[in-house]
Image (cartoon, rainbow, N blue to C red; front, top):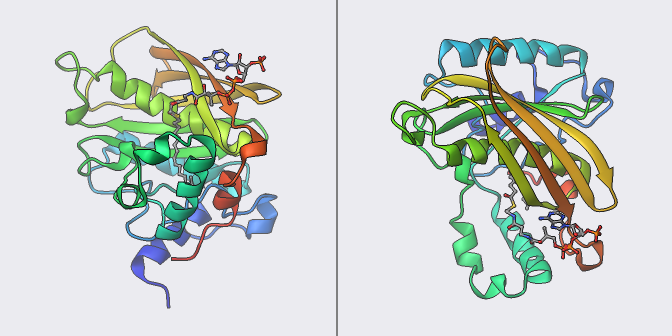
Length: 254
Ligand SMILES: CCCCCCCC/C=C\CCCCCCCC(=O)SCCNC(=O)CCNC(=O)[C@H](O)C(C)(C)COP(=O)(O)OP(=O)(O)OC[C@H]1O[C@@H](n2cnc3c(N)ncnc32)[C@H](O)[C@@H]1OP(=O)(O)O
């Protein structure tokens, strides 16, 4: 029998509450992008701290998952111990000098930056992926601990959730990638504690370069808060010791 965590994770992978079509009918493994999780819950499922806008948008996008055109992505705080070990090998291969600083013990304590806040205080978000359109939409409710100018989000917090969204878009196409450039235009300050939509688009791939852009808008689409373009680089395949795409496609069991 599945534990509650595993059941929740499976629920997230289903992407649709109340029963989804079988994985094959989606034309894409349901495990795609389901970052394996061992220790904690899937943070992209509804929680009491979600406001009504966040909840309503979650329901709307979940409905869009029913025909398989959209997939809801699961999201966890940590990677499994096994993946941690694999990832040490990855760091060593790509960035040997970094492996002198970040050892396995530190890596085992690591948490995804965006998931390290108390529920409702920091980044509450859920992402939905449309493979055909090469889009990822992130529904984001930022909490009070993301304040910059009083009453508004810190620009760095906005940059973080943008990087997470465009980064995810690059990962699904490019595997192991890193942000080389992130160019942000802040057009209008985002009120603290509001829920916004981040709409990202993979624009093109040229060799190892992936160009992804995004817009951050109010949920009624009337206010354009932020626009960004980004460049991600697929890490040199010759040095490849760790396959992020494979980890994502074949998550390890808990
Ligand atoms: C892991 C397993 C676990 C599974 C679960 C995973 C869970 C994941 C969950 C959730 C993820 C959420 C997602 C978050 C996403 C966040 C991502 C970040 O924030 S990454 C941190 C910030 N980025 C850095 O620290 C990079 C630092 N920079 C570098 O390391 C290098 O510069 C790098 C890798 C980007 C490129 O280095 P080179 O040596 O591979 O490549 P070169 O030869 O320099 O460049 C290749 C081409 O790209 C151009 N290029 C490189 N940088 C450029 C730049 N800044 N602007 C324009 N062009 C650039 C170059 O001119 C070259 O172009 P020509 O081939 O000659 O045409």
